[in-house]
Amino acid sequence: MTTFKKRPLCSLAYTSENHTYEENLALLCECIVNLPKDVIVVLPELSFTNFDYDNFSVAAAFSKEITTRLCALAEEQIIVATMIEVREDGGFYNVAKVFHRGTVVHKQAKVELFKFGGEHEFFKAGREEEVAVFEVDGIRFGVLICFEIRFKKLLQKLEGAEVLLIPAQWGKLRTQNFVSLTNAIAIMNQCYVVASDTKNSDTTGMSGIITPFGEEVRNKDALVLEGIYDEKEVLKMRRYLDVGIK
Image (cartoon, one colour):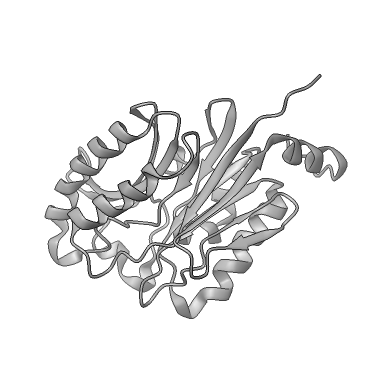
């Protein structure tokens, strides 16, 4: 008898403004501790420091504390978080890290910067080669950071992933874009999407979990939204509505 993998999924709609870095870290870690022990959880983009352009060096230095705390926290859980880091070339990058069993199992820097918001004036763009499907506990994952979900070339690199993880700080004026795009990505890629957006004054707060069939649930006013990854649902969609995704 075939046993299909199942895992709890979680998206957060966290209000990160008006808190210090330390307060955001403490509050988010407290939230994670209370989730199921084997959950897959996505935190909103730069939810610890926000885009604190006036204190970029301080925010980047704080990434070491974030990494240390999340490594200590992540046992069976799979935790996805983004942070500002300085890389070997001296540039500042918006880096997504995936934590599991006390270590960083995957990381990638944001490739497509949101120029309308001035990100390119502060960050350097990551390399497309870092955007790739990776496997944790037998599940294939992919990560896209906020604005990147608009780019077909990046989505194509993640074809075959069973769960797409999307940390975001998405502008409130484009709320419907965020909802429509995350729904469409789940349907087109026949996969689960876990999208996590901040619930700040200028962002959508429309975090959510979408199934391969396109059924969505959204956080709305709830900080925490939980769902279930069911391997059988991915296989069923890809078998009976075969569009070439393996």
